[in-house]
Length: 79
Image (tube, rainbow, N blue to C red; front, side, top):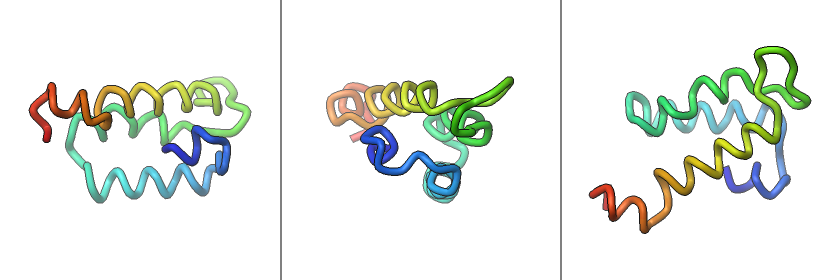
């Protein structure tokens, strides 16, 4: 997700890799449910009913803050 946020790779291929990683490692969890639809509907440039780069970047930032930051994970009892 951070590579996407830094603008290093915003391709559909890369987001498909993120989707696969999430499915294999976090399937059925809250973090997976938070991201799966957005990843599945991502398309550079967006479009009707599609997630564009800016919206997906915003979602990644939220997920990192909410689910992956050490402070938040500790507060949620995840660490």
